Length: 88
Image (cartoon, rainbow, N blue to C red):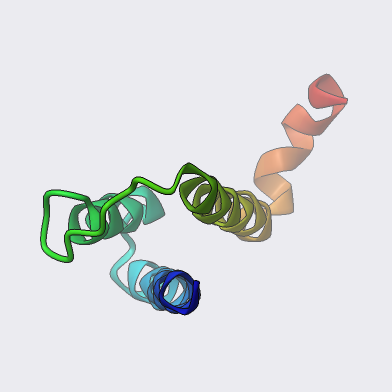
């Protein structure tokens, strides 16, 4: 359990740092997520076994929260305003 929490914390920290790096380099954040997937994949560098489905679901939910949050924060109102009426 402690190892799971530690891995989740490391992934979240890497995600936040990745956001700062992607903003400075002006590259899509999806590329950072792909790199995290490569690093933490079950047959990649870190070799985390994903046999605990509940833990994987929790990590994915946290990642999705970050995606949605930063997608909303990074959106400029001038770009969203013409579409907002149609979306509502």
